[in-house]
Image (cartoon, helix red, strand yellow):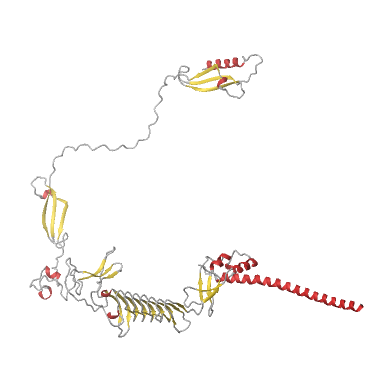
Length: 556
């Protein structure tokens, strides 16, 4: 390797010094490339090519390569392996491999002695209070299949003890005898298990796996609750269920649930529409479900009252409070002496009356006595007008009555307010005792102000038709005067559409037109004053001329 480097250096020096006389030496440049293993280098190496930098770009281009200067720096051959070094320290233990399969079972061992037992009576005592059986165990060493005294293993000894003497389920007094008067419940002359399932009027109701199909009375004179039902279930569960066969010609003989109470306090009472009688009538306080009419009542009926008798109960109706009546189909009455007589009617409040299909009366002494009428407030009345809606305030004890079918009537002595946004800053108001709407026109509620050209506005008004006309659907066909909404919107673009005119807009146009006319009037009056002044001056000149003419005529 050292020899190659020396030869290469000498060759490069000679090449650099061999330029012909007078030729510019631009310097020697080199280009290196990897040389694969082959005839030039058995083990591979680096190929070095040289040449003069003729174009002066500081790199060796292919046309500048002098192949006679090409050299190879070859890798040396691998030397012999050195001696093995000393072993390193042992590494940590690797993880345990998986367990191999279980080998085949070994041959069976010799059979041991069998275990045998012996039972002997055990007298009442420390081991068994009421006596029992002692059971001893041990290996049968001699193979005689008997447990001999020398084979007993005392550690395995056990005792099977007798329990307390029981009493027959029919033996109510526990005297181990049959007492026919109190214990022969089925009156068959014998006391047996059948008597356990046949309680009489003096017996307790006992836990049984067989249902006790019997009639019985429950009574009590103490201060504790007459009936208590304890249920320890912590999941949804019915704790109290009444079952019975539907009555009164239903044709069914299959018992069904009539009432359920679950352990969360929920309850349901069942029934069959058109079957059964009303549970209670007359005066008194009660919570009543009447399945025959699928009707519900809750509250009180005064002395000798019949409001909740069957004749005053409508199908699918609901009434609550005091002396209320819900007689109409699907009607609802709530409050104090309220009455809902119409089909699907509702009466709520104090002596309210709803007597019409879908009629609604709410409040104090209100009356909705026509189909689809509504009366709300204090002494509001539909006055027999169908489809009317009447609202009355508390300003007086006089009634507010509808005067026509499908009429909307309101008495609000404190005024009206109609708002058209959530913050109640836009809308209209009718003040107490007032007769016209007051439109919200607060400067603070407005924005995007713009001045008007009065002359242009007058010009548009001059071209706008203003006619007398009649509304097609207005009762009585009275005449009115005014512009058409289409013309007004086309001229001024005010409002939301071309079929209505906002009163605030037309008032504003009229006021702006009045201001424009005022300006014209002021200008006209100023011109009139100037004309009058000029006329006076002319008259004065005429008078002077006449005087001058008179003087001249005298001089002649």
